[in-house]
Every structure is written in C-alpha cells, then in structure tokens.
Image 1 (spheres, helix red, strand yellow):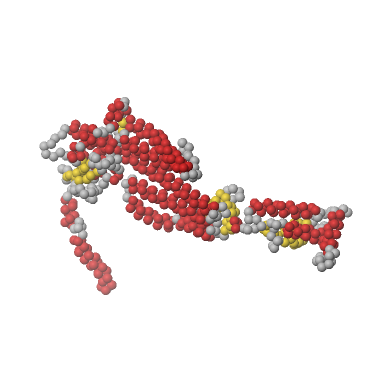
Image 2 (spheres, helix red, strand yellow):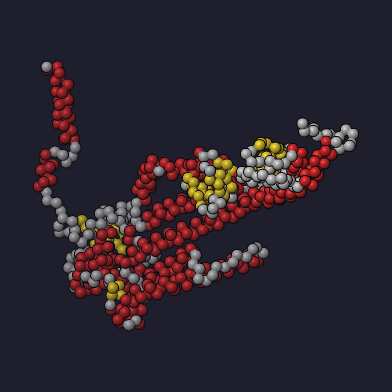
Length: 567
C-alpha cells in the first residue's frame, strides 16, 4: 500500500520544497512585502493628466481653448521663493501662450512623449523635456518634472519658457488681422474657434484648388514647350476643370499652409492634420498608380507591336502586384504619421498574413493559377478559347480570375484555379478551318447522275485555292431514309474565323450552282406517296448527264483512264 502511494508523496514533497525555496526569491511575493504594500496607500492619479509631457501639453491646450484660464495656469511651473504674480497676469499669460501655440506650433502632437519619464535620449536631464515648435525652434517649449504636495511626479511648463511668452506674442501677425475684422466675427466662437477663422477655412478650399490648378497648368505648358522644342509628340493638356492627383496634392498643401497662417486652434488642428494626412496618402496613391498604369500601358503597347502577348499579360499582372504593394506601404506610412506603432502593425501583418494564408487558400490558389497561365502562355489577352464548353475572347487575366467575352456579349469570369486545371482549347493557333457538309440528294437520281454530281463538286474543290487538296474528299456515304447522302470534307486555308466563313460561303454557293446546273434537287426530310406518270427529273438534263458519263468512260483518247460501267 505504501509503495503504491510513494510516487504521489514524492510529487507532493517536491511541490512543497519548490514553493518553500522559490517564494523568497521572487520579490513582491513574500508575506512581508505584501504587508508593506497593503500598508502603503495608493497614490491617486493626477486629475489634470500631467503625468506625461503629452498629457501636460494637451491638458493645457484643452483648458485654455475652453477659456478656463484658472485651470490652465495649473500647468505652469509653481513659483519658487518670494516671487509672486497675480492670477490675472497668469491667466493673461495662459491666453497669450495658447495664441502662440495656435499660430506657431506646427509639429504633430502625436509625437510628443506619452512616457511618464519623458524622452531619455534627447540629451537633457531626466526631469526636463523639450517640445519642438517645428518652426526653426525659435521658441522651444521646455517642461520640467516636479513633485507635487501629494508626492506625485508631474510635468509643468517651465518658467524659462513662460518668461519668453509676452515677447513672442507681440511678434504675432494675426492679432493685427483681427483688428481689421468686424468685432462680431472675432468675439463669437464655435467650439472655441472664432467665426473669422471658420470662414477662412471654408474660403481657402476654392482658393487652394484654383491656385493648385494654375500651377499644374503652368507645369503642363512648360513641359509641352520643352517637348515641342525637342520635336517630340505634343501631349494634350487636360481641361481646366479636370482635377488630377497632382492638383489635389498641391491644393491640400496650399490649404494647410493658409490654415496654419491664420493661427487656428492647435487642438482642432490635430484632427485637421490627420484629415490632411489621410487625403495626402490617398492622393499619393492615386498619383503613383496613375504613373504605374502609364508605364504599364507604354510597355504593353511596345510588346504588342512586337507580338509578345504573353509578356504583355505578365506586365499587367506585375502592375497589379505593384499597386497592392504601394497600397500597403502608403497605409503603413499613414499609420506612422497618425502616431501608431508601425512595428506592431508589421507584426500584426505577419500574423494576419499567416491567418490569411490558412483561411484564403482558394484566393492564393487563384493567384498562382493566374501566374502559371501567364508563364505557360496557354492563353493570352485577345485569344479566342474554349473552357469547360464555354467559348469566348479573353479580355483580362487578373489576380483572381480570367474574364471571357462570350458570343452573347456577356462577361464570363472563371477562377484562375479552375483555369489552371481545366482543359483549355485555344482557337488562336488554328491555321485552317474544317468545312464538313452533308448534301442529301433525292432517290430518283440515276447512278450516273450521282457520279456526275460527285465529279463536279470534286472539281470545284480542286479549283478553289483556299481549299487544301491533300485532305479534301467528296464521297457518297450512305442511303438515308429519304435521301442519298454525299459528304464534303475539306480544310479551308484561313486562320481568321470571319474570313473562313466568307470563303466557306462562296464555296457552298458554288456547289449550289453546280447542283442546279446538273439538274439535281436536294431532298426534303418528308415522306410522300405519289401515284403519277410524270417524271421528276428533267429528261434533257438527265440525258446530258448520261452522255457526259459515257464520254468519261470512253473519252476516245488512247491511254486515257476510263470509268467502270455500272453493272
């Protein structure tokens, strides 16, 4: 019994020993540490959010923007010694400081440190932080970290920075602008922004687009003059009202510069900057894709002129891969500009790619199927092919599917995975077309009359230069229910389908003329019982056919071939 429980006792003893020796080695898990932690009360967070440099800056801007200057001055470094400043002077200083930030701060607030310790790689002491204004650093902002009466380490605007505020405020230009505007537009505000600034933001939109379009037109005329001087083909100029990606980019930059000049609220400029950044990313993606498509079209036209259709399709596929890569790159740049951690996004992209690869196997199967189709040159854009009993002209070979334009003018989309495993009949490689017809003659024809008709049709095929002589044949093949069947089998030497139809039509009309000349009537698929003494065959034409056959049997020339007589 004891031997059965020995393994369990050994496990319990090992567990107890491991716990006894491991607990003292892990700080914070001992009973004394727990008791000490329980005795120390937790420090409440700062209600003003001054634990980090970014929290201090944003908290001051929000308080001052809402004109709560009594709250905004609490972000200033407390005065030391016997220095004393009235609250009115401090609130006026806060108002001036906000005006400076609204006009001169052009750096993104998203890049201000969120770490309670600030940035430790800027060469400053650990209790100091420097925030660049982004305008040549003529007025840098310094923050200091101090301990408040509650024992919290908080960040404040340093007195060194605040002492320079009045001088910098006097150098601002927009207060002079406000003096010339109606007081109604200056005094009234929406979300803390004066009416005149909202009016300026709206009016700057058409001004920016007109200025950008004029700059683009000047650039287009300059390029056109240069091409004309070098005797190159002149590119037509776009209409004045057409807005391209370059015009859109310049309009965004001009509007951003104008809005920055009038000194709008730095708080709302955060959202405005993000909108501008996203619009610029869309415009740059638009511009890059237009460039890639122009390059692809030029290379494709060059390859098509040399008959390199497979290479042209590969260029089209590569262009789409490049556009996908540009989209991912622009998205990562936008995320970085909005303050997101791109490294984490890249890691997420890696994990997402793995999950996508597992969950989108069919999609990748179609992608690689499209690549295999292009490299094997099974079909090319413009080919007429038959896939799974569906016939059409290949209009596009994409990343996911291949599109065929059917004879009914519908667009058929076939996944590339199916195309890679399907039996594809490419009709473009046909060097000749099969013409196979069956002529049904009436039963009242004599054997010699039938022989005459066969010889006439054979001679027509031999005389036609578009009919392949080695493979053509005209044979009496069967006695059908209501007719004598004659098969015409030949190849017409045409590679184009429409030309083949035209040649075949001319050949069939010639055969009809030959049948009419021989007095032959094509049988109808009917069954009729007739009691008559009349002959259906023209006796004169029948006699002429018999005489012709007799002459062919005995042409009267020594050594000439003779046809056998019917028994």
